[in-house]
Length: 138
Image (cartoon, rainbow, N blue to C red; front, side):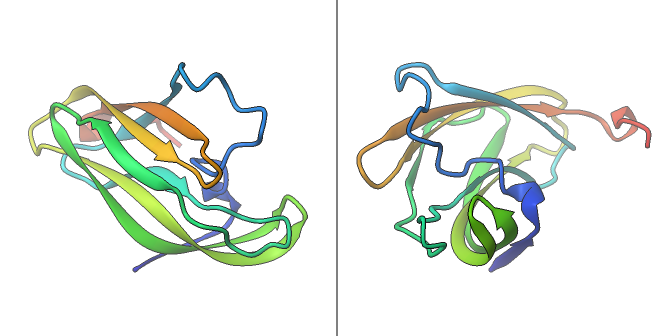
């Protein structure tokens, strides 16, 4: 089981508000990764107004990446000051991408996320796999 903590994971893949975009156009994101390393590409939860967890969404891989694989793991997410919730701990699904050991470049995948209540969202995720020397300097 994976335990994630903090609000930094709070914005990636959470249930979107009612004004979400047109269901026919995918939500597009780009993520950086290293070759052959697990990289988090999405966190999926459902927080109800009373700060408890609702049913988790169903996640389906629509288009698999050409040079890697996607896995989804169960986790618990802890967050503070999320919407009207001062502190919460809820179950989640966390999606990870892992490229082939020798791959460097862009890999594209599409995930379908079906939320309770019937809303469906397509996420187009581009994973930019870079060599070890290509990271941003801190």
